[in-house]
Length: 281
Length: 310
Image (cartoon, rainbow over all chains, first blue to last red; front, side, top):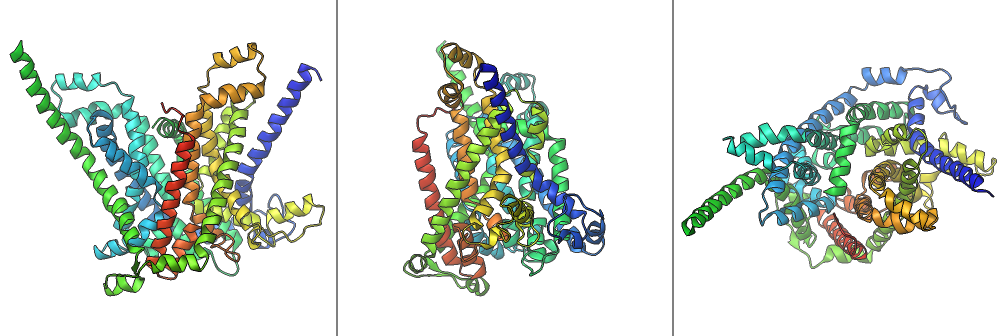
Protein backbone atom coordinates (compact mmCIF):
# COMPACT_ATOMS: atom_id res chain seq x y z
CA UNK A 1 0.00 0.00 0.00
CA UNK A 2 1.31 3.44 -0.95
CA UNK A 3 1.76 6.36 1.40
CA UNK A 4 -1.39 7.93 0.07
CA UNK A 5 -3.47 4.81 0.64
CA UNK A 6 -2.16 4.61 4.18
CA UNK A 7 -3.11 8.20 4.82
CA UNK A 8 -6.63 7.69 3.56
CA UNK A 9 -6.99 4.55 5.64
CA UNK A 10 -5.86 6.37 8.77
CA UNK A 11 -8.28 9.22 8.06
CA UNK A 12 -11.15 6.76 7.62
CA UNK A 13 -10.20 5.06 10.87
CA UNK A 14 -10.07 8.38 12.70
CA UNK A 15 -13.49 9.51 11.47
CA UNK A 16 -14.93 6.13 12.35
CA UNK A 17 -13.68 6.26 15.95
CA UNK A 18 -14.80 9.89 16.19
CA UNK A 19 -18.27 8.98 14.97
CA UNK A 20 -18.63 6.07 17.40
CA UNK A 21 -17.61 8.15 20.42
CA UNK A 22 -19.79 11.08 19.40
CA UNK A 23 -22.82 8.86 18.87
CA UNK A 24 -22.21 7.38 22.33
CA UNK A 25 -22.11 10.89 23.83
CA UNK A 26 -24.98 12.44 21.88
CA UNK A 27 -27.51 9.69 21.21
CA UNK A 28 -28.85 9.34 24.79
CA UNK A 29 -29.67 13.06 24.82
CA UNK A 30 -31.47 12.75 21.50
CA UNK A 31 -33.34 9.73 22.78
CA UNK A 32 -34.54 11.47 25.93
CA UNK A 33 -35.67 14.51 23.97
CA UNK A 34 -37.58 12.35 21.50
CA UNK A 35 -39.23 10.27 24.24
CA UNK A 36 -40.39 13.41 26.01
CA UNK A 37 -42.48 14.26 22.94
CA UNK A 38 -44.05 10.82 22.70
CA UNK A 39 -47.31 9.70 24.25
CA UNK A 40 -46.91 7.00 26.89
CA UNK A 41 -48.50 4.60 24.41
CA UNK A 42 -45.79 5.27 21.90
CA UNK A 43 -42.96 5.36 24.44
CA UNK A 44 -43.95 1.86 25.54
CA UNK A 45 -43.83 0.45 22.05
CA UNK A 46 -41.32 -2.17 21.01
CA UNK A 47 -39.47 -1.92 18.69
CA UNK A 48 -39.22 1.79 19.51
CA UNK A 49 -39.87 4.59 17.02
CA UNK A 50 -36.82 6.72 16.20
CA UNK A 51 -38.88 9.90 15.77
CA UNK A 52 -42.25 10.45 17.51
CA UNK A 53 -45.02 9.45 15.13
CA UNK A 54 -47.52 11.72 16.79
CA UNK A 55 -45.45 14.39 18.56
CA UNK A 56 -47.17 15.76 21.61
CA UNK A 57 -46.37 18.19 24.41
CA UNK A 58 -48.85 16.54 26.76
CA UNK A 59 -46.27 15.45 29.28
CA UNK A 60 -44.86 19.00 29.38
CA UNK A 61 -48.32 20.41 29.94
CA UNK A 62 -49.06 17.87 32.65
CA UNK A 63 -45.72 18.65 34.29
CA UNK A 64 -46.49 22.35 34.35
CA UNK A 65 -50.09 22.01 35.49
CA UNK A 66 -50.45 18.85 37.58
CA UNK A 67 -47.04 18.16 39.08
CA UNK A 68 -46.50 21.39 40.88
CA UNK A 69 -44.05 19.73 43.23
CA UNK A 70 -41.54 19.61 40.47
CA UNK A 71 -41.47 23.40 40.34
CA UNK A 72 -41.07 23.70 44.09
CA UNK A 73 -37.95 21.54 43.77
CA UNK A 74 -36.90 23.63 40.81
CA UNK A 75 -37.28 26.91 42.67
CA UNK A 76 -35.51 25.52 45.73
CA UNK A 77 -32.62 24.41 43.59
CA UNK A 78 -32.30 27.86 42.03
CA UNK A 79 -32.22 29.45 45.48
CA UNK A 80 -29.75 26.95 46.93
CA UNK A 81 -27.44 26.86 43.90
CA UNK A 82 -27.60 30.62 43.33
CA UNK A 83 -26.79 31.57 46.92
CA UNK A 84 -24.10 28.89 47.17
CA UNK A 85 -22.45 30.04 43.94
CA UNK A 86 -22.54 33.68 44.99
CA UNK A 87 -21.12 33.16 48.48
CA UNK A 88 -18.53 30.68 47.19
CA UNK A 89 -17.45 33.24 44.61
CA UNK A 90 -16.97 36.03 47.17
CA UNK A 91 -15.06 33.74 49.55
CA UNK A 92 -12.96 32.31 46.72
CA UNK A 93 -11.97 35.81 45.55
CA UNK A 94 -10.89 36.77 49.07
CA UNK A 95 -9.02 33.57 49.86
CA UNK A 96 -7.62 33.09 46.38
CA UNK A 97 -6.18 36.59 46.49
CA UNK A 98 -4.66 36.03 49.93
CA UNK A 99 -3.08 32.72 48.90
CA UNK A 100 -1.74 34.13 45.66
CA UNK A 101 -0.30 37.42 46.99
CA UNK A 102 0.91 36.84 50.51
CA UNK A 103 3.44 34.08 50.86
CA UNK A 104 2.93 33.30 54.51
CA UNK A 105 3.90 30.11 56.34
CA UNK A 106 0.33 29.03 56.94
CA UNK A 107 -0.42 28.91 53.17
CA UNK A 108 0.85 25.38 52.74
CA UNK A 109 -1.34 24.16 55.59
CA UNK A 110 -4.39 25.83 54.13
CA UNK A 111 -3.71 24.39 50.68
CA UNK A 112 -3.19 20.94 52.19
CA UNK A 113 -6.48 21.22 54.09
CA UNK A 114 -8.33 22.29 50.95
CA UNK A 115 -6.81 19.50 48.84
CA UNK A 116 -7.62 16.80 51.37
CA UNK A 117 -11.12 18.23 51.87
CA UNK A 118 -11.84 17.42 48.22
CA UNK A 119 -11.00 13.78 48.78
CA UNK A 120 -13.20 12.90 51.74
CA UNK A 121 -16.34 10.93 50.89
CA UNK A 122 -19.54 12.95 51.28
CA UNK A 123 -21.28 10.19 53.26
CA UNK A 124 -18.58 10.47 55.89
CA UNK A 125 -19.36 14.15 56.41
CA UNK A 126 -23.11 13.59 56.28
CA UNK A 127 -23.03 11.02 59.10
CA UNK A 128 -21.59 13.67 61.38
CA UNK A 129 -23.33 16.75 59.98
CA UNK A 130 -26.70 15.07 60.39
CA UNK A 131 -26.18 15.17 64.17
CA UNK A 132 -24.18 18.40 64.32
CA UNK A 133 -26.64 20.46 62.26
CA UNK A 134 -29.45 18.99 64.33
CA UNK A 135 -27.85 20.39 67.48
CA UNK A 136 -27.62 23.91 66.05
CA UNK A 137 -31.10 23.68 64.46
CA UNK A 138 -29.85 23.89 60.90
CA UNK A 139 -31.08 20.49 59.83
CA UNK A 140 -34.02 20.71 57.42
CA UNK A 141 -33.18 24.30 56.51
CA UNK A 142 -31.87 25.79 53.31
CA UNK A 143 -29.22 27.63 55.34
CA UNK A 144 -27.73 24.40 56.64
CA UNK A 145 -27.71 22.84 53.20
CA UNK A 146 -26.16 25.98 51.67
CA UNK A 147 -23.34 26.07 54.25
CA UNK A 148 -22.55 22.39 53.67
CA UNK A 149 -22.50 22.96 49.91
CA UNK A 150 -20.32 26.09 50.15
CA UNK A 151 -17.82 24.01 52.11
CA UNK A 152 -17.90 21.36 49.40
CA UNK A 153 -17.35 23.94 46.63
CA UNK A 154 -14.65 26.04 48.32
CA UNK A 155 -11.57 23.83 47.82
CA UNK A 156 -11.72 23.81 44.04
CA UNK A 157 -13.05 27.37 43.80
CA UNK A 158 -10.24 28.80 45.94
CA UNK A 159 -7.45 26.99 44.05
CA UNK A 160 -9.00 28.01 40.73
CA UNK A 161 -9.32 31.65 41.79
CA UNK A 162 -5.80 31.81 43.17
CA UNK A 163 -4.37 30.54 39.88
CA UNK A 164 -6.11 33.48 38.17
CA UNK A 165 -4.62 35.98 40.62
CA UNK A 166 -1.19 34.43 39.97
CA UNK A 167 -1.49 35.67 36.40
CA UNK A 168 -1.88 39.34 37.43
CA UNK A 169 1.41 41.25 37.76
CA UNK A 170 2.20 42.48 41.28
CA UNK A 171 3.40 45.85 40.00
CA UNK A 172 -0.24 46.88 39.62
CA UNK A 173 -0.81 46.72 43.35
CA UNK A 174 2.46 48.45 44.16
CA UNK A 175 1.43 51.29 41.87
CA UNK A 176 -2.04 51.49 43.41
CA UNK A 177 -0.63 51.62 46.92
CA UNK A 178 1.87 54.33 45.92
CA UNK A 179 -1.12 56.27 44.57
CA UNK A 180 -2.64 56.03 48.04
CA UNK A 181 -5.27 53.37 47.50
CA UNK A 182 -6.10 51.19 50.52
CA UNK A 183 -5.69 47.41 50.43
CA UNK A 184 -9.39 46.65 50.18
CA UNK A 185 -9.88 49.32 47.55
CA UNK A 186 -6.93 47.91 45.58
CA UNK A 187 -8.36 44.41 45.66
CA UNK A 188 -11.92 45.31 44.72
CA UNK A 189 -11.39 48.24 42.35
CA UNK A 190 -8.12 47.45 40.62
CA UNK A 191 -7.34 43.72 40.77
CA UNK A 192 -10.82 42.20 40.73
CA UNK A 193 -11.88 43.60 37.34
CA UNK A 194 -8.82 41.88 35.85
CA UNK A 195 -9.88 38.43 37.02
CA UNK A 196 -13.46 38.67 35.75
CA UNK A 197 -13.00 35.63 33.46
CA UNK A 198 -11.89 33.63 36.48
CA UNK A 199 -14.85 34.84 38.49
CA UNK A 200 -17.24 33.78 35.74
CA UNK A 201 -15.61 30.35 35.67
CA UNK A 202 -15.79 29.92 39.45
CA UNK A 203 -19.38 31.19 39.68
CA UNK A 204 -20.72 29.00 36.89
CA UNK A 205 -18.73 26.01 38.06
CA UNK A 206 -20.13 26.30 41.60
CA UNK A 207 -23.65 26.70 40.27
CA UNK A 208 -23.22 23.67 38.01
CA UNK A 209 -21.80 21.47 40.75
CA UNK A 210 -24.46 22.41 43.33
CA UNK A 211 -27.21 21.90 40.75
CA UNK A 212 -25.77 18.38 40.50
CA UNK A 213 -25.84 17.78 44.26
CA UNK A 214 -27.91 14.89 45.50
CA UNK A 215 -26.33 13.44 48.61
CA UNK A 216 -26.22 16.66 50.67
CA UNK A 217 -29.83 17.47 49.91
CA UNK A 218 -31.15 13.98 50.48
CA UNK A 219 -29.59 13.66 53.95
CA UNK A 220 -29.86 17.21 55.29
CA UNK A 221 -33.41 17.97 54.07
CA UNK A 222 -36.44 15.84 54.93
CA UNK A 223 -39.11 18.43 54.32
CA UNK A 224 -40.56 17.94 50.83
CA UNK A 225 -41.17 21.68 50.45
CA UNK A 226 -37.45 22.41 50.81
CA UNK A 227 -36.08 19.65 48.59
CA UNK A 228 -33.92 20.43 45.60
CA UNK A 229 -34.34 18.98 42.13
CA UNK A 230 -32.14 15.87 42.20
CA UNK A 231 -33.32 14.76 45.63
CA UNK A 232 -36.94 15.57 44.89
CA UNK A 233 -37.00 13.84 41.53
CA UNK A 234 -35.26 10.74 42.87
CA UNK A 235 -37.61 10.44 45.84
CA UNK A 236 -40.85 11.28 44.08
CA UNK A 237 -40.48 9.69 40.67
CA UNK A 238 -38.07 6.81 41.20
CA UNK A 239 -38.47 3.50 42.93
CA UNK A 240 -42.13 3.10 42.08
CA UNK A 241 -43.18 -0.14 40.51
CA UNK A 242 -44.25 1.37 37.24
CA UNK A 243 -42.47 4.38 35.90
CA UNK A 244 -44.23 7.03 33.89
CA UNK A 245 -41.40 7.17 31.39
CA UNK A 246 -42.74 10.03 29.29
CA UNK A 247 -42.87 12.14 32.39
CA UNK A 248 -39.45 11.02 33.62
CA UNK A 249 -37.97 11.99 30.26
CA UNK A 250 -39.78 15.34 30.31
CA UNK A 251 -38.40 15.97 33.79
CA UNK A 252 -34.93 15.12 32.50
CA UNK A 253 -35.23 17.63 29.66
CA UNK A 254 -36.58 20.42 31.88
CA UNK A 255 -33.98 19.64 34.55
CA UNK A 256 -31.09 19.81 32.09
CA UNK A 257 -32.26 22.90 30.22
CA UNK A 258 -31.28 25.81 32.52
CA UNK A 259 -27.87 24.36 33.22
CA UNK A 260 -27.26 23.63 29.53
CA UNK A 261 -28.17 27.20 28.57
CA UNK A 262 -25.94 28.61 31.31
CA UNK A 263 -23.04 26.41 30.27
CA UNK A 264 -23.23 27.10 26.55
CA UNK A 265 -23.67 30.84 27.14
CA UNK A 266 -20.48 31.01 29.18
CA UNK A 267 -18.67 28.07 27.64
CA UNK A 268 -15.64 30.05 26.50
CA UNK A 269 -14.91 31.40 29.97
CA UNK A 270 -15.82 28.14 31.67
CA UNK A 271 -13.57 25.96 29.56
CA UNK A 272 -10.62 28.33 29.77
CA UNK A 273 -11.07 28.70 33.51
CA UNK A 274 -11.50 25.00 34.20
CA UNK A 275 -8.46 24.06 32.17
CA UNK A 276 -6.36 26.77 33.80
CA UNK A 277 -7.52 25.86 37.28
CA UNK A 278 -7.34 22.10 36.99
CA UNK A 279 -4.17 21.74 34.98
CA UNK A 280 -2.08 24.59 36.31
CA UNK A 281 -3.61 24.98 39.77
CA UNK B 1 23.85 53.99 56.12
CA UNK B 2 23.35 51.76 59.13
CA UNK B 3 20.41 53.78 60.30
CA UNK B 4 18.76 53.61 56.93
CA UNK B 5 18.76 49.79 56.76
CA UNK B 6 17.40 49.62 60.28
CA UNK B 7 14.57 51.92 59.41
CA UNK B 8 13.77 49.88 56.38
CA UNK B 9 13.84 46.70 58.43
CA UNK B 10 11.35 48.06 60.93
CA UNK B 11 9.25 49.33 58.10
CA UNK B 12 9.29 45.90 56.46
CA UNK B 13 8.23 44.08 59.58
CA UNK B 14 5.41 46.52 60.13
CA UNK B 15 4.30 45.92 56.58
CA UNK B 16 4.68 42.20 56.99
CA UNK B 17 2.53 42.31 60.08
CA UNK B 18 -0.13 44.26 58.22
CA UNK B 19 0.08 41.76 55.37
CA UNK B 20 -0.50 38.96 57.84
CA UNK B 21 -3.54 40.63 59.36
CA UNK B 22 -5.01 41.43 55.97
CA UNK B 23 -4.35 37.97 54.48
CA UNK B 24 -5.63 36.32 57.64
CA UNK B 25 -8.85 38.31 57.53
CA UNK B 26 -9.38 37.38 53.88
CA UNK B 27 -8.76 33.69 54.56
CA UNK B 28 -10.66 33.38 57.82
CA UNK B 29 -14.22 32.81 56.51
CA UNK B 30 -13.14 30.09 54.04
CA UNK B 31 -10.94 28.39 56.61
CA UNK B 32 -13.72 28.45 59.21
CA UNK B 33 -16.30 26.99 56.84
CA UNK B 34 -13.88 24.28 55.66
CA UNK B 35 -12.98 23.36 59.23
CA UNK B 36 -16.54 23.39 60.56
CA UNK B 37 -18.28 21.68 57.65
CA UNK B 38 -15.56 19.34 56.37
CA UNK B 39 -12.63 18.67 58.67
CA UNK B 40 -14.51 18.49 61.98
CA UNK B 41 -17.27 16.23 60.55
CA UNK B 42 -14.70 13.89 59.02
CA UNK B 43 -12.77 13.55 62.29
CA UNK B 44 -16.07 13.24 64.17
CA UNK B 45 -17.26 10.44 61.89
CA UNK B 46 -13.98 8.56 62.36
CA UNK B 47 -14.51 8.78 66.13
CA UNK B 48 -18.12 7.65 65.78
CA UNK B 49 -16.98 4.55 63.89
CA UNK B 50 -15.75 3.21 67.23
CA UNK B 51 -19.06 3.84 68.98
CA UNK B 52 -22.41 2.18 69.25
CA UNK B 53 -24.18 5.15 67.72
CA UNK B 54 -27.59 5.00 66.08
CA UNK B 55 -30.19 7.52 64.95
CA UNK B 56 -32.02 7.02 68.23
CA UNK B 57 -28.95 8.44 70.00
CA UNK B 58 -29.46 11.69 68.09
CA UNK B 59 -33.15 11.82 68.89
CA UNK B 60 -32.74 11.09 72.58
CA UNK B 61 -29.48 13.04 72.86
CA UNK B 62 -27.64 10.11 74.46
CA UNK B 63 -23.98 10.01 73.38
CA UNK B 64 -22.69 6.85 71.71
CA UNK B 65 -20.79 4.28 73.73
CA UNK B 66 -17.45 2.64 72.97
CA UNK B 67 -18.13 -0.83 71.62
CA UNK B 68 -14.71 -2.46 71.21
CA UNK B 69 -14.51 -2.24 67.41
CA UNK B 70 -17.83 -4.10 67.10
CA UNK B 71 -18.83 -2.06 64.01
CA UNK B 72 -15.69 -3.12 62.18
CA UNK B 73 -15.78 -6.73 63.34
CA UNK B 74 -19.41 -7.15 62.30
CA UNK B 75 -18.78 -5.66 58.86
CA UNK B 76 -15.73 -7.84 58.29
CA UNK B 77 -17.38 -11.03 59.49
CA UNK B 78 -20.52 -10.55 57.45
CA UNK B 79 -18.35 -10.35 54.32
CA UNK B 80 -20.08 -7.11 53.34
CA UNK B 81 -16.98 -4.98 53.68
CA UNK B 82 -14.71 -7.18 51.56
CA UNK B 83 -17.36 -7.42 48.88
CA UNK B 84 -17.89 -3.65 48.80
CA UNK B 85 -14.13 -3.02 48.59
CA UNK B 86 -13.81 -5.41 45.63
CA UNK B 87 -16.78 -3.82 43.83
CA UNK B 88 -15.43 -0.32 44.43
CA UNK B 89 -11.97 -1.21 43.11
CA UNK B 90 -13.37 -2.97 40.03
CA UNK B 91 -15.52 0.06 39.25
CA UNK B 92 -12.75 2.60 39.83
CA UNK B 93 -10.07 0.74 37.85
CA UNK B 94 -12.41 -0.13 35.00
CA UNK B 95 -13.88 3.34 34.60
CA UNK B 96 -10.58 5.19 35.05
CA UNK B 97 -8.77 3.06 32.46
CA UNK B 98 -11.62 3.11 29.92
CA UNK B 99 -12.14 6.82 30.46
CA UNK B 100 -8.48 7.57 29.89
CA UNK B 101 -8.25 5.45 26.72
CA UNK B 102 -11.47 6.79 25.17
CA UNK B 103 -10.76 10.37 26.26
CA UNK B 104 -7.25 10.15 24.84
CA UNK B 105 -8.52 8.69 21.55
CA UNK B 106 -11.07 11.49 21.20
CA UNK B 107 -8.53 14.15 22.18
CA UNK B 108 -5.96 12.87 19.67
CA UNK B 109 -8.54 12.83 16.88
CA UNK B 110 -9.79 16.32 17.72
CA UNK B 111 -6.20 17.55 17.87
CA UNK B 112 -5.49 16.23 14.36
CA UNK B 113 -6.79 17.86 11.22
CA UNK B 114 -10.35 16.54 11.19
CA UNK B 115 -13.24 18.81 10.20
CA UNK B 116 -15.64 20.63 12.51
CA UNK B 117 -13.33 20.27 15.54
CA UNK B 118 -14.47 23.56 17.07
CA UNK B 119 -18.10 22.56 16.82
CA UNK B 120 -17.46 19.05 18.15
CA UNK B 121 -15.39 20.36 21.05
CA UNK B 122 -18.29 22.55 22.00
CA UNK B 123 -21.17 20.08 21.82
CA UNK B 124 -19.24 17.14 23.25
CA UNK B 125 -19.36 18.85 26.67
CA UNK B 126 -23.15 18.42 26.86
CA UNK B 127 -23.18 15.13 28.86
CA UNK B 128 -20.81 16.63 31.43
CA UNK B 129 -23.37 19.33 32.24
CA UNK B 130 -26.23 16.88 32.77
CA UNK B 131 -26.90 16.43 36.52
CA UNK B 132 -25.80 12.98 37.74
CA UNK B 133 -29.28 11.91 38.83
CA UNK B 134 -30.66 12.81 35.44
CA UNK B 135 -27.85 10.98 33.64
CA UNK B 136 -28.87 7.97 35.75
CA UNK B 137 -32.47 8.39 34.56
CA UNK B 138 -31.35 8.76 30.95
CA UNK B 139 -29.40 5.51 31.04
CA UNK B 140 -32.12 3.67 32.95
CA UNK B 141 -34.43 4.55 30.08
CA UNK B 142 -31.83 3.37 27.54
CA UNK B 143 -31.50 0.06 29.44
CA UNK B 144 -35.22 -0.32 30.19
CA UNK B 145 -35.92 -4.12 30.11
CA UNK B 146 -39.16 -4.02 28.05
CA UNK B 147 -39.00 -0.98 25.79
CA UNK B 148 -35.40 0.15 26.13
CA UNK B 149 -33.29 1.20 23.19
CA UNK B 150 -30.42 -1.08 24.15
CA UNK B 151 -32.67 -4.14 24.15
CA UNK B 152 -33.69 -3.16 20.63
CA UNK B 153 -30.07 -2.58 19.57
CA UNK B 154 -28.86 -5.92 20.98
CA UNK B 155 -31.75 -7.69 19.30
CA UNK B 156 -30.81 -6.14 15.95
CA UNK B 157 -27.07 -6.81 16.31
CA UNK B 158 -27.51 -10.44 17.33
CA UNK B 159 -30.07 -11.01 14.59
CA UNK B 160 -32.84 -11.72 17.07
CA UNK B 161 -30.88 -14.26 19.13
CA UNK B 162 -30.84 -12.18 22.31
CA UNK B 163 -34.27 -10.74 22.90
CA UNK B 164 -34.37 -10.19 26.63
CA UNK B 165 -31.29 -8.12 27.36
CA UNK B 166 -31.73 -6.31 30.68
CA UNK B 167 -28.48 -4.60 31.64
CA UNK B 168 -29.29 -3.53 35.20
CA UNK B 169 -31.34 -6.57 36.23
CA UNK B 170 -28.52 -9.03 35.69
CA UNK B 171 -25.80 -9.26 38.38
CA UNK B 172 -23.23 -9.98 35.68
CA UNK B 173 -23.85 -6.78 33.69
CA UNK B 174 -25.26 -4.30 36.23
CA UNK B 175 -21.84 -2.90 37.12
CA UNK B 176 -21.03 -2.45 33.43
CA UNK B 177 -24.30 -0.59 32.98
CA UNK B 178 -23.40 1.91 35.68
CA UNK B 179 -19.83 2.20 34.40
CA UNK B 180 -21.18 3.16 30.97
CA UNK B 181 -23.32 5.91 32.48
CA UNK B 182 -20.30 7.17 34.46
CA UNK B 183 -18.12 7.15 31.33
CA UNK B 184 -20.79 8.99 29.38
CA UNK B 185 -20.77 11.83 31.88
CA UNK B 186 -17.02 11.96 32.50
CA UNK B 187 -15.37 11.41 29.11
CA UNK B 188 -16.03 15.03 27.97
CA UNK B 189 -14.02 16.61 30.81
CA UNK B 190 -11.17 14.10 30.42
CA UNK B 191 -11.03 14.87 26.71
CA UNK B 192 -11.11 18.61 27.35
CA UNK B 193 -8.20 18.46 29.80
CA UNK B 194 -6.12 16.14 27.61
CA UNK B 195 -6.77 18.41 24.62
CA UNK B 196 -5.40 21.37 26.54
CA UNK B 197 -2.25 19.32 27.15
CA UNK B 198 -1.95 18.25 23.51
CA UNK B 199 -2.22 21.87 22.37
CA UNK B 200 1.04 22.61 24.19
CA UNK B 201 3.13 19.79 22.72
CA UNK B 202 6.00 21.37 20.82
CA UNK B 203 5.56 21.20 17.04
CA UNK B 204 9.34 21.57 16.60
CA UNK B 205 10.01 18.47 18.64
CA UNK B 206 7.47 16.42 16.67
CA UNK B 207 8.95 17.67 13.42
CA UNK B 208 12.49 16.87 14.51
CA UNK B 209 11.42 13.34 15.40
CA UNK B 210 9.78 12.91 12.01
CA UNK B 211 13.01 13.97 10.31
CA UNK B 212 14.90 11.48 12.50
CA UNK B 213 12.64 8.79 11.06
CA UNK B 214 10.21 8.22 13.95
CA UNK B 215 6.80 6.96 12.86
CA UNK B 216 3.54 8.22 14.35
CA UNK B 217 3.44 5.54 17.06
CA UNK B 218 7.02 6.33 18.07
CA UNK B 219 6.30 10.05 18.13
CA UNK B 220 3.25 9.47 20.31
CA UNK B 221 5.07 7.41 22.94
CA UNK B 222 8.40 9.25 22.94
CA UNK B 223 7.30 12.85 22.52
CA UNK B 224 3.57 13.42 22.98
CA UNK B 225 3.06 11.31 26.10
CA UNK B 226 6.15 12.60 27.99
CA UNK B 227 5.23 16.20 27.11
CA UNK B 228 1.72 15.94 28.55
CA UNK B 229 2.61 13.77 31.52
CA UNK B 230 1.67 16.42 34.10
CA UNK B 231 -1.75 16.89 32.49
CA UNK B 232 -2.25 13.12 32.41
CA UNK B 233 -1.33 12.87 36.06
CA UNK B 234 -3.92 15.44 37.12
CA UNK B 235 -6.64 14.18 34.79
CA UNK B 236 -6.28 10.60 36.00
CA UNK B 237 -6.13 11.57 39.67
CA UNK B 238 -9.31 13.66 39.28
CA UNK B 239 -10.95 10.67 37.68
CA UNK B 240 -9.82 8.30 40.46
CA UNK B 241 -11.22 10.57 43.19
CA UNK B 242 -14.47 11.22 41.33
CA UNK B 243 -15.17 7.55 40.75
CA UNK B 244 -14.13 6.49 44.24
CA UNK B 245 -16.76 8.88 45.54
CA UNK B 246 -19.49 7.90 43.06
CA UNK B 247 -22.80 7.49 44.85
CA UNK B 248 -25.84 8.93 43.03
CA UNK B 249 -25.51 6.76 39.92
CA UNK B 250 -25.43 3.55 41.96
CA UNK B 251 -28.18 4.68 44.28
CA UNK B 252 -30.64 5.66 41.55
CA UNK B 253 -29.83 3.02 38.95
CA UNK B 254 -29.57 -0.15 41.03
CA UNK B 255 -29.54 0.83 44.70
CA UNK B 256 -26.65 -1.63 45.10
CA UNK B 257 -28.46 -4.60 43.56
CA UNK B 258 -29.26 -6.93 41.95
CA UNK B 259 -28.13 -9.35 44.63
CA UNK B 260 -25.59 -6.79 45.94
CA UNK B 261 -23.69 -6.94 42.62
CA UNK B 262 -23.22 -3.16 42.64
CA UNK B 263 -22.87 -2.57 46.38
CA UNK B 264 -19.81 -0.34 46.64
CA UNK B 265 -18.39 1.32 49.75
CA UNK B 266 -20.53 4.38 49.00
CA UNK B 267 -23.73 2.33 48.88
CA UNK B 268 -22.79 0.20 51.89
CA UNK B 269 -21.97 3.22 54.05
CA UNK B 270 -25.16 5.04 53.08
CA UNK B 271 -27.27 1.95 53.67
CA UNK B 272 -25.74 1.25 57.06
CA UNK B 273 -26.00 4.87 58.19
CA UNK B 274 -29.25 6.14 56.71
CA UNK B 275 -31.31 3.05 55.85
CA UNK B 276 -30.43 0.81 58.81
CA UNK B 277 -30.02 4.00 60.88
CA UNK B 278 -26.76 2.66 62.34
CA UNK B 279 -24.55 5.74 62.01
CA UNK B 280 -21.60 4.12 63.83
CA UNK B 281 -21.49 1.24 61.38
CA UNK B 282 -21.80 3.62 58.42
CA UNK B 283 -18.93 5.66 59.82
CA UNK B 284 -16.82 2.49 60.06
CA UNK B 285 -17.38 1.91 56.34
CA UNK B 286 -16.46 5.50 55.42
CA UNK B 287 -13.34 5.27 57.59
CA UNK B 288 -12.15 2.17 55.72
CA UNK B 289 -13.14 3.89 52.50
CA UNK B 290 -10.99 6.94 53.32
CA UNK B 291 -8.03 4.76 54.29
CA UNK B 292 -8.32 2.87 51.02
CA UNK B 293 -8.47 6.14 49.11
CA UNK B 294 -5.40 7.49 50.89
CA UNK B 295 -3.49 4.28 50.04
CA UNK B 296 -4.55 4.44 46.39
CA UNK B 297 -3.64 8.12 46.03
CA UNK B 298 -0.31 7.50 47.80
CA UNK B 299 0.58 4.58 45.51
CA UNK B 300 -0.55 6.63 42.52
CA UNK B 301 1.71 9.52 43.50
CA UNK B 302 4.64 7.14 43.98
CA UNK B 303 4.15 5.76 40.48
CA UNK B 304 4.06 9.26 39.04
CA UNK B 305 6.78 10.52 41.39
CA UNK B 306 9.15 11.51 38.62
CA UNK B 307 6.63 13.68 36.83
CA UNK B 308 7.53 17.30 37.32
CA UNK B 309 4.67 19.67 37.98
CA UNK B 310 4.85 23.06 36.41
